[in-house]
Image (cartoon, rainbow, N blue to C red):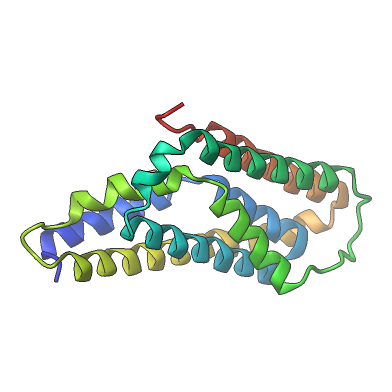
Length: 203
């Protein structure tokens, strides 16, 4: 198992990192404002699923391969940026309505999954961050598994917290239809900007 001092340091660093809003948080809050808490929580499930996939790739050592393919990986990032921009424009232009058509759980999950997966920088971050908290004198697999499960648990907790906090603002914004849509569109655009600015060292 992982050494306790290393684990506590990892948890402290992870919480500090997760409290800094990024593209995922912007998307989650936008989902609350435009579609409600349930949609946002499904989006959290999608972003968390993407983390599991990315952590698995890191565990398999694919981050080294991705480094060599950095230009193509960046293409994925820009596809994600374009995807968010299109959603933001549609939301901004839509007619305000208090009777918003709900999206399906699958669509909300997929939106979170795609946006998180289209941020390849996280693969490189995981590859650089996790080894700092691994003791090479101990079995590596149990340590990495413990860190990965803990990381995803913290992410789900904090991202869900953002969704629940944003839910408190939603009734006030819904009473101001146009403002609600503009706020949601702005958050989506902010997520696109955040994703666009997440440059890789290879660039």
